[in-house]
Image (cartoon, one colour):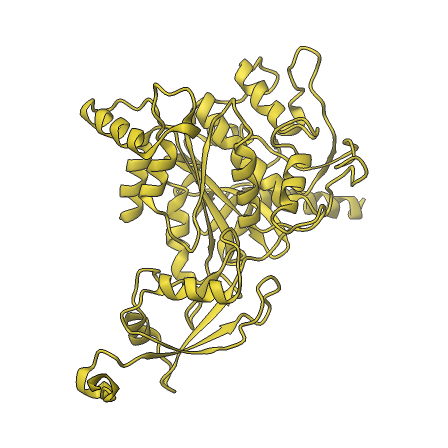
Length: 107
Length: 337
């Protein structure tokens, strides 16, 4: 019964999820679009785990490239937690924006 | 005559542009430092010594009925061949081996070259690469990215018994040291690495740690790291780190290019990258009866190509070769810096 009591996020500080928007790079040709782009992610989740979740959602093979880039076009460290990323790259609207892309092709 | 004088000046100008500038800055080529003023000929020899693969025409049709030329689509595949060829040169001849025109080359050199001839029975031929790309979702004649070419090389290396390379392609910008160690170690006493159990791996590791510096049982490692260093353009924060890679003794350069054109980057001078360009179509060359290959068209003997690093397309793949385990350990410590 106690589990039904909603935990106040501000009281514990632990369960405040990070609000993330994941967008496809506008010129991306290989990767499919996501059917959902807004995510609430646990603060202590490493980016690598979040990337695995997105890979699964997009049904990607392990040999396909999938890069998550921060707003400034930097590749964040995959071991960083979502909270660390949020602190560094949060937008003024309160969301963390990530862009995903594969690699370009050359002839 | 006035016109011809102008033409003369134009050619002089274009020659000048191709030439290296007079500078005290060092040139780095695949982990070796060169000084332009003191030793320009050595630098040019080092560049022309790299195996250079270009578009070719008049080879036997891929898959029997496919294209008999890769002009217009094969440039990333050719760059992958160049990087692998450099790994094989390091493996069999060493980084300090030098190629000289019209000189008799060692047997290993011809054997390496024969791996890349445009025939369906050569293990890293354009035929094998294009057909292996089908499994990566690329139909024959379709353009590749750096990662696709790396995945193809990884698969083809499994069939290459002569070189027994371990090819590791990092995913998600991450190199897992333990995975590499597991992949490269095999029990020296076992005839087949495929049958080794984890238990044997452990015991082999343990024993070799006792005898310091003993590196038998380590498969030569080709390490490829596909990256995306920005969205539309290369992010300037990565430029120094990218250049730093060419200074590492394990460097095999980088696969990449400017938008649409793949190049094989082998070094840099200041803010310019030095590369080998596959965008020249030459005729197919086969081996002679005695197994040697007429190699004149496999070395680029023109002035080296250069481009501004800011024009680099962000999709690249870094290559490294670690012949012994100690080379890999050294690589790990260099990267952490």
